[in-house]
Length: 266
Image (cartoon, rainbow, N blue to C red; front, side, top):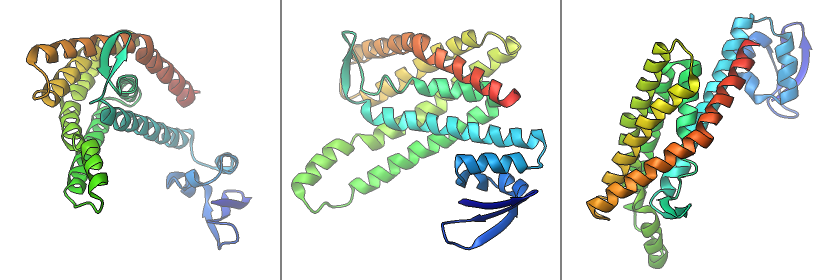
């Protein structure tokens, strides 16, 4: 959208260059989130003329921040999950292909839990679980359709055929491991009276990451490797994620929480 003119709290704007001129109040544009479609400079100009209370503007900020964190959470899983069947070598150990991306999902989820509370964190898990279930169903349905080129279809099937089951497994993992992470994090937040962020992240990560590794590896590799190898893979994957979380994910959570709090309460 293109800002044309501001008179007090009244905004004149066009949807596109040369288009019809619309008029609305700055307050209405903010409340209906239409301000998101303006350029950064125009958004600042509109917000300056806005007569909304600081509380209303803070709610707009909270909504924007939550959407960004939700997008990062879903994106990290949608990137990591399709890569996970491929094993890669990391520090002389075998790990799932998406191992450097997946643990970040716990950092984003803990940040949502810390800033917005357990209810928002639970809704985040449910939204992402529905997205994974939709992906599983959509990919499975697409694989049932006949391909025009047999050779290309063979490679296509080989690449995508594990994904419906893999997405469904992660759907189950989200509803168990991530909800367990949310509960434990919230419980310790209450017990610690909101203090000791790093400690709370560590405790919830230790349990949530273990459940996730155990469920997805045992379900996905149950016909692909012996039980002993699977348990060794679970332990190796879990230990790597714990170390990675300590070195990368928990510091990211601390930085995100500190930055968001400064933005919301400045």
